Image (cartoon, rainbow, N blue to C red; front, side, top):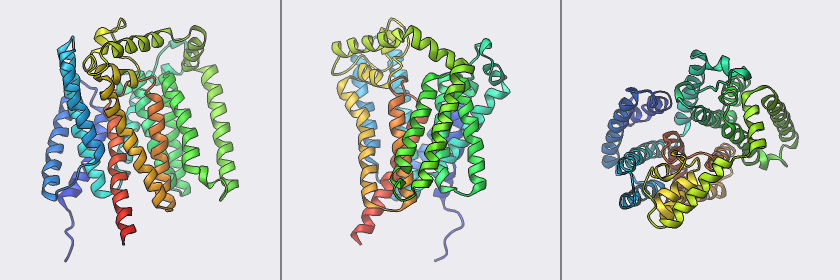
Amino acid sequence: MIRPVFYPSDLLKWLLLPFIVGLMTLSRIEGYSKLMVLFGLIYSCLFLIYSLYRKLSLQPEVIIYFAWTAWSIIGTYNAIDLAMHFQALMTALQIGVFIFLVAGIIALYRNISIVMIAIIIGGIIVALSSYLYGEFQLATQIEARTRATGLAGNANSFAYYLLFAVFAVFFFWEIKSSLWWRVILSALLAIYVSGIIYSGSRKGFLTLVVFTILWFLFCLGKRLFKKPITVFVTLLILSVGIYFITDFVMSKTLLGKRFEYAIKEGEDTRVQMYKEGFDMIEKNPLFGVGLNNYRVLSSFEMYSHSDYIEVAANTGILGFILYFSIYLVLWRRLNRIQAMTNEPRLLYIIGLLKASIITMLFAAFGVSTITEKLTWLFLASAIGYSWSVERALVTIEKK
C-alpha cells in the first residue's frame, strides 16, 4: 500500500509551529491575543475530532490538570472577587485545552523537535523586538535604568521566555553536533543570554545559571568516566563562562545594581508576600480563597510572586497536591525511561527535560506560572513525548 503524500495529522503537527510562536509573540498584544485564543480553540477542536476518530488515549497528567481545574471551581464559595476568580478559571481551562492539544500531538509523533524549533523562533522574535523598540540599546546603559521587555511587555516575562529558548538551544546541542550547527546554536545562545541580562531580571539570570549547572549534571555527568577529557573541557568552559558573565553582570549592568540593592536592602516585600500567603492558607486550608484572589486579599494588591504560594492560597492544600503531582508523575516517567534504555540521544533528551523541570520548579519560588501558557506548553510537550516513548519501550521489552 502506497503511503499518501500528506496525512491530515501532518497538518495538525505543523500547526504547532505558528501556534507556539504566536503565543510567545502575539498573545500579549491587544487584539491579537483574542485571535490566538480563537486559533487555539479551533486547532484544539480539530485535534479533538481526530483523537476521537483514532481513539487516542489521554496522558495521566492531562487528566490531573483538568481535575485540578475542576477542584478550583469550589473556590467560588470563598472568592471575594468573583470576576477575578472566573477570569482565572477561564484561563486555566484554556491552558488545559492547550495541554491536551500539545501533549496529544507530540505523543502521536513521538517527536518533540517541532516544539523546540517553535520556541527558538519565538525567542528570536521576542529578543529582536526589544532591539527594534530601542530598549536593548538603553538597557546597556546603567544610568538609563531601562529594562528590556520586547513583545513580552514585562521584563521578567521577557527573561522567562528567553530562558525557554535557552532550553531549546541546549536540546539541539547534542542532536545537531556538527561544527556549523554548534556555531549557529552558540550565536542564538548569545542573543538569548544577552536578552536575559539586559532584562534586568534577577530571577531570569539565576535560573539561567541553575539550568546550566543542571544541564551539565544531567546530560553530561554520566559521561565523566567514559569521556573524562571532553567533560573536563566542557566543565572548564562553562565555569570560565559563568565567572566572566557574572563578573560583567555585577559590575557593568543594571541587573548587577539590582542584585547589589537586593543584597543590601533585603527582600522584605517578597517575605511579607509569603507570610500573607501562609495566613490565607491557614484560614482556608481546604478550598483556598479562589483563583486570582490572593492579589485581592494581599496588602500589595498583586500576585504572590511564588507558584507554590499562589496555588496553595488560591486552591487549598488539595489543589496544591493535585497541581504539583503533575510534575511528580512526569518525573517518575522520565526515571522509568532512563532505566529502560541505553540510547545516548534519548538519555540526553531525558536529562535535558529533567534539568528544565527542576529549573522551572526553582523559578517557581520567585514567579507565579499558574497562568503562564508557555510553561504549560513546554510541560505538555515533555508529557506527550515521554508518555509515547515509555509505551514504545514497554512494547519492545514485551517482544
